[in-house]
Length: 83
View 1 (cartoon, rainbow, N blue to C red):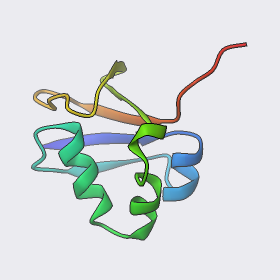
View 2 (view 1 turned 135 degrees about the horizontal axis):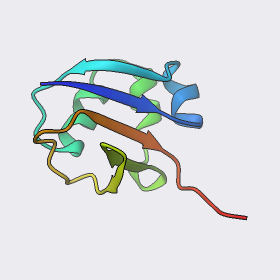
View 3 (view 1 turned 120 degrees about the vertical axis):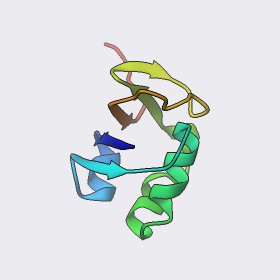
């Protein structure tokens, strides 16, 4: 499956890209993260602490164990605070 993967804030800075198209066989977000981490060190650094990240599938907040079935877009970003 092909997905648009978006990176925000420090995740974008560590990976060096705002977004990319990814061909994946992952069935969950967690599996996608493992595939990305295996690519190279910058992905490993960005996904080193999943507790410091949030994820959205097709612009809806979800968990890392969420299924990717039918997804078009996955976004990774740090937790947001209001003010």
